[in-house]
Image 1 (cartoon, rainbow, N blue to C red):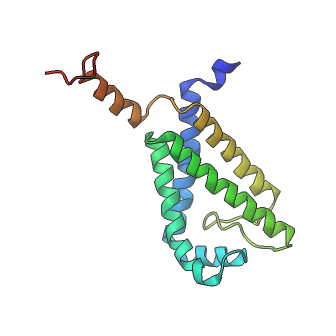
Image 2: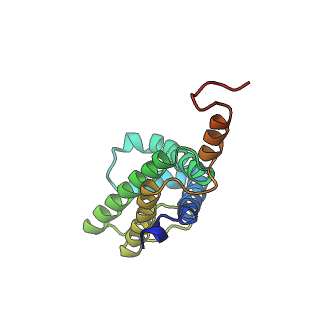
Length: 162
């Protein structure tokens, strides 16, 4: 059973799913920063003065983390960052639900209302991030390509070859 979970292509699929979600949602927020700022404001968690800066920075963080996952650069760090964002989203959605706020999640231009469906979706993505952190050595990574090139240019003692 362990071999199924540690299969390198399962990690590739998990990276692509999480990466594409973060890139697509992030780009959507970058295109419509005003709408995203309103979504953040609706959660009533952050001070209003910090909403605009958050609406401008967070989407770029999402896009960069998603791209790094897709191409396979700093996989563990990228998965950790995506996971941290997902935990934040789950907490924000949960607190909105507990306070009875009837708002959209703010994930994209086609946002859904906050609810258990959105929490479940984010938890599934979080589980994929955990998988990526546990088994980061999947196939098709730029990290593995650059490390193999680095190793091939050095002899067994770590000295550069001619």
